Length: 247
Ligand code: PGA
Image 1: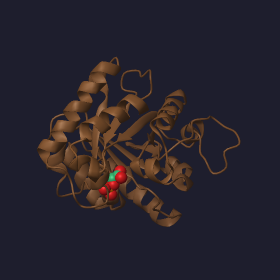
Image 2 (image 1 turned 180 degrees about the vertical axis):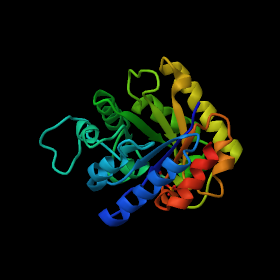
Image 3 (image 1 turned 90 degrees about the horizontal axis):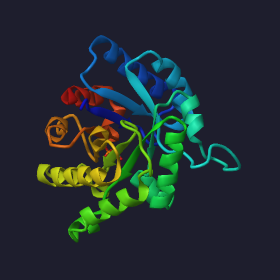
């Protein structure tokens, strides 16, 4: 399966630096397209502008979250049709920062993922255990519960991405070792086999402190179909090195 390298910019980027970064990446992709799919998920304020400048490029656009409803009285929220309208093809849902900071439950994440699918977006459903859960060897049970609770009920082929992001690895510079990543990704593939019609068409991304140095090793692990990159996606050269490692 062709790998997907996704950049999650989180709450970073004003118009000047965000558009400059997107332009830089689009230029690199035009000159020497890597043998992987590319996605960037800028903050909502930049989606429409970056969507226009990526039009016709090899880089897809994604939102970082969406509301479960298509429209209505939800001050400050953004709906899946709005993301689609801004040029998005993907929406991240259930990132651990949203599960923690916005108290999103598995059921809420499933509703968002279902809304994304309904709007014609591919949801990237994030799961992952905390440090305490890993210490207690509860990581598979936790990830299994999140899969059972937060994946959409019905998924067409190629219409779903799952991102395994151990909470303790996000933004910390710490990553699980190769065997630990392989264990969870194989487990996720097995869970997908029980639940979706085309489990092998679902990309399983690893996320958490992926950088230009460790990307090649992580991307070579079985069942790692790409990466969800936070900090290192804010630097064009680092993101590009990771993309090349996926090819
Ligand atoms: P990080 O973030 O690469 O900065 O660890 C990854 C993520 O949260 O998606």
